[in-house]
Image (cartoon, rainbow, N blue to C red; front, side, top):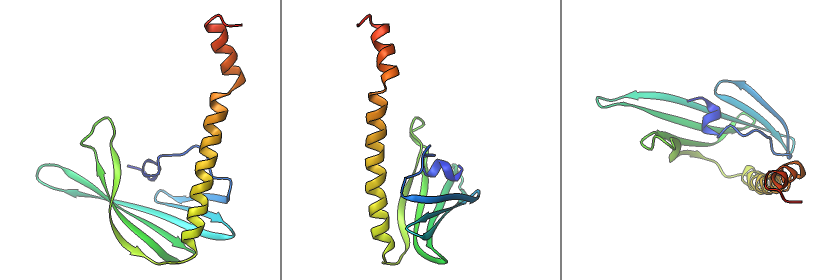
Length: 136
């Protein structure tokens, strides 16, 4: 499962992020408020007699310092909705990065709401619907 699957492969970047660069298969670097945040997701297969399990480690670095590390497991028991789940915290260092990510989360949500509003109110789609249903 590639890194993009873990993050849901968004088709946009939050407007607060001034740079987003995929460094390799496992690593993405974001620049936000003049700080460089690096996400690394490393996955490994664990063979067992009944099946092979996928486990991952999601790490967040502020500059060179690791500030967060989360253990994750891939759950494919629901074949219609396979997904990664966090099951443990390996590292957590308090700092200003927490406020940065809260601010970013708020902005991501407001931008999502605005995208949904624009999608619902798309004049071309509304005109097509009116035409399709014979509404003037």
